[in-house]
View 1 (tube, rainbow, N blue to C red):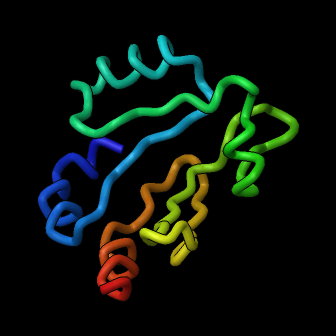
View 2: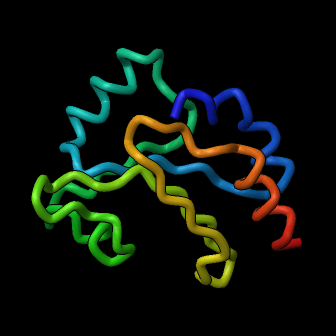
Length: 105
């Protein structure tokens, strides 16, 4: 997630809002963000009811209660325009996200 901080101007240029979301409690997410130097975009908690948003998007790991590392580009009408699900150890490619945003124009 810190790598998106470097690209915020590119997201803004495309009229896009970056949000981080996890199934962690708010204080856990805040501590994690602080350990990495914080972020200037919102970090959201999907803790209660646990994983409800992650489940609706199909990225909740039922056996662990964690969510997959996933990117969703949602247009202004609420339609999902791009989905990219990665292994938790991989960083999703920013260039593909930017290309998906460019297609929305």
